[in-house]
Length: 127
Image (cartoon, rainbow, N blue to C red; front, side, top):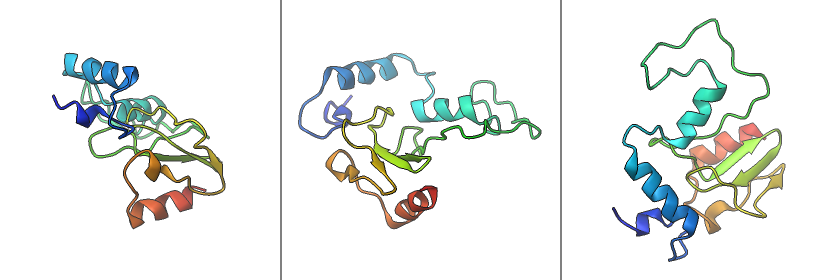
């Protein structure tokens, strides 16, 4: 396990939260990544990864519910938007203080990796 991989804020220090998260995921190999878990709780069209059941085609997502943006590994992408607001999160979905903006994308580069152009366009459409 690489400690620097667990430095979500990329400040050269491992916080208590980062340390605990690192071990909580390492201890449970069956643990579903947090972003995918959040999506499964909101959108019934997403298949249940634990039972491998097909989603129910007649069910509907909860209207107005926040659907997080996930990376390929199932963790949160740095920029999240909903109802005209955007904010920056770490890979576990915890919002960074003072990162929330209204009607524009926040500068999450100070906290995490940069967006590529496709991701930026996707977020612009969510505003």
